[in-house]
Length: 277
Length: 277
Image (cartoon, rainbow over all chains, first blue to last red; front, side, top):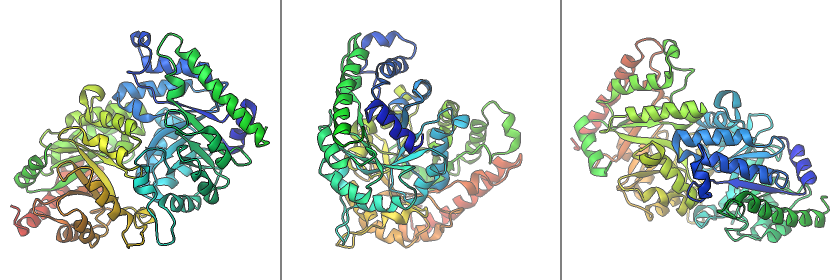
């Protein structure tokens, strides 16, 4: 998906919501456990209930990989069920030397070889240039590079500071900016540090940011928009637990829709406030 | 596998060789392509030809994932074929927020859930503490954390330096040292910078180091041993292309053995020189 197609989706749906599919078999409704593939069945119901309210889906690959071959089969079916007008994110945090990153790009982008054709993948930048650039060689595919994450451990290395008071996450953004463009690179920026978006936007004014941490992890949507929105919106705000685990009953999909709708409505207000719609 | 079991293997086999299983279907002998699972068939032949010469095997997960479900099946069979007296490394470069890293740990360590029970996994440290520690909660399993890698892009961020002239890779080692011990943490250190091992050993005198980059990537085994060996050997030196692609003919396994044997013999000399055997 191109940037302009993504922006068009945001305007059409009045939403910049990404629904995280971190599907944990111990947290889904019990009545689904009798299904042949409970994880896929759950995902399909969540997708059907939310696809008009969000612009992106983000399966967290770890949750599938943890079940080995069977999990990979659930992932395959889930990917096939994703609506083609939604931006798809393989949340995989991959990154390795050049020839290996090329294999990971094949795994998540090249449907003919792997069966999966996600629009984008999340990338850990520690190994530098050749760990990122192989993902940029695929047309209309995106590398979403970790910059400032929302977890507790993010402070351990991402705030490591050089003599010029540049922190590692800023240095990462400046460097990665030179390897691609706002047409094929996004950054992960956690919502738990609203004011940090000011600094991020100094380094990446145009890029889209993938923002986890709203809701369960404590981030505020208003802060994210106030400090992080740009003229094209420039935000994909992810919510997972607040939506997909809104209910453990037979009404799980309906409740998921209600939660997604609340976020979509808040987002619509923010888009109006910013003059984007 | 415990550290003492690993050291015992090194002494018994007079080797600290790790064979990389980065099996690329475009590089294996043509006559294997008629097999039902050429990647597994190739791996099994390589394992049978080298298992008495090496102490570890390291499948590079990207090479399997790139074939989707089918690739994951080859990985499963390959893991089952690994000799139990060899240390097994899932070269996966994973790392995510706590609950997700826990899922990755399940994927590669918890055979009952995922089908795979590797001894260790490689980890990217960018996301900090909670991205690493879930892997340390499994008894006798290891996290092998990226410190200083052998690829070109390694310089981009790993040499980022703070006010006290501490480089990021040193800071990573110091910090990660506090989360575990030399009994459950190793570091990845590329062989292409022999003298860098001096600095690494200042920060991690006791830890085992997983060393890629000998051979195809240009590193020297002698330099690695001179600067990197400790009293327990403390090194697992990986070779991939020089061994597994030594021949594209029907003699591929035999040639792989010859190359592995050359390295084992060099390693034996180094172990003798250091008084370890």
